[in-house]
Image (spheres, one colour):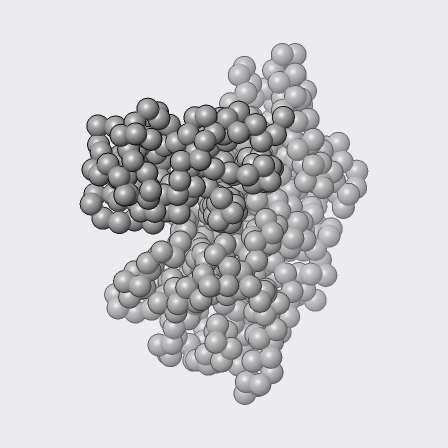
Amino acid sequence: MTTRQPIVTICGHVDHGKTSILDCFRDSCVQEGEAGGITQKISFTLFPIEQMKKACPLIEKSKLNLKIPGFLFIDTPGHAAFTNLRKRGGSLADLAVLVIDINEGIKPQTAEVIQILKHNKTPFIIALNKIDNISGWRQIDSDLKKSIEMQSPNVKQIFDERYMTLIGSLNSHGFESDLYYNIEDFTKKIAMIPCSAKSKSGIPELMMMLCGLSQKYLSEKLELGKDAKGVTLEIKKEKSQNYIEAILYDGELSKKDEIAVASFSGEPIITRIRILEEIQPLCSKFSPKDKVQASTGLRIQLVEKADILPGMPFVIFKNNKKEIEEIFKKQISESIKTEKQGIIVKADSLGSLEALLVLLKQNNISVVKAGIGKISKTDLISAKANLEINELDSLILGFNVDIDEEAKEIRGKIKVITNDVVYKLIEDTVKYREEKRKEIEKKRLMELATICKLKMLPQYVFRNSNPAIFGVRIEAGKLVSGTNVINEKGEKVGRIKNIQADRKSVDQANEGMEVAISIPRKNFERQLKEIEFLYSDISASQFKTFKKNKDLLSNNEIKTLQEINQIKGLVD
């Protein structure tokens, strides 16, 4: 049996030290060269077993007979839910290292990553990074356990409090966890490995845990298949040539092979390979190859110039188009499930689209249409159709994508929310939908009656009678033409026939506006001059409805409602 490299995703909250930990493994300093020290794209690192033994003397020391040929590490942006890079039937990653800053604990993105790991059933371990940031921490011994136990009592107390708090937080997410040296059965508890990417303390133990768990629990899963299977990660342009960066997660791929790449339309793209390159060990450079074996990172130039989308699976083509079509169709429909009604979602790759759909489902937000690429004119037309069915669903979400120019021209009132931070996108969506729901409910409520308080402006009398036309300021609520008004004593004044703002007739006016109103069959001088305020005339049942829905009203509207109740004595 040939064993392939386990694929390990390094994931977690932005700035918790994912790339720094990977740098310790590969002994590089990539992190310092990144924009703002934040990973901007997915990158992979091939880590052969020979180098691993050099980096981690504990492997030889413990006499661990490793059968795995090494690891393929994937460093993922903390600001994207790339933890579910996909292959058929689950996550592309065999294992994950969840990096958590011991001093900051579980942040929103950490919680999101945990949800996705849970959803994909991806086994993971926790790198409790930045132990050196605990005030007074010293690296006393090369043995991590001894070093922890020999810390001064107050430092040890802070460490214990922080990791125990994390155990509690992970428990609330449905995971039992403990420090790695306290665990007997690793199938029942998630192992925490305290470490520091800065001082490299705990890094050999982290590596050792990865080796041990891969060896013990993944041996069957790591059996190398015959046929090549992979996932496209990024489409790159270099000197007018298009390259695909991809991961081969099973089988062997030859430069002479034809491959079939899935498309969103369902029709696979069948193409030959012009250039096949493999990632070099512990390096970000590629070298040309005639044949490569999983698991590995690739750069491929294809003969076909078709539009290939990031995140799409590919397989070796053996004149079996119908069979491949079925496999791809099943794979994409399994992961991109939509409802009969809901919002429209676009993302930059299949993996991030799936992650977004998982998180939206957890927030009870239905999706009617999902796709990869820019927000298009077609998406906006679909959203406008949604507007007629359900105003709440007239919304387009874009993860890491823009609106194309053609679509901008017809955008109109359609709400578009975009972000390259997926948890922020979800947060903004939940907030917008809640505000929109209240707005819709309030609109329905105000259709029954209007809460309104008007301050008379006697200096602006435009006509004394038949009808009386004069100025008012809207102190609270909304004034709608046709509203019946009363005075401060509860006496009926009449019905507002017309409203004028800036010499133009309007159907309604909002709080803070000064407008002219007309009331038929009234003489301003005799009947209205002494009045200071006018109020909308509401019934006892309307008052009760407003009171029941007071969460939809502003403070000024609630205050006005109470004043109307006092004037009319509607409810005790």
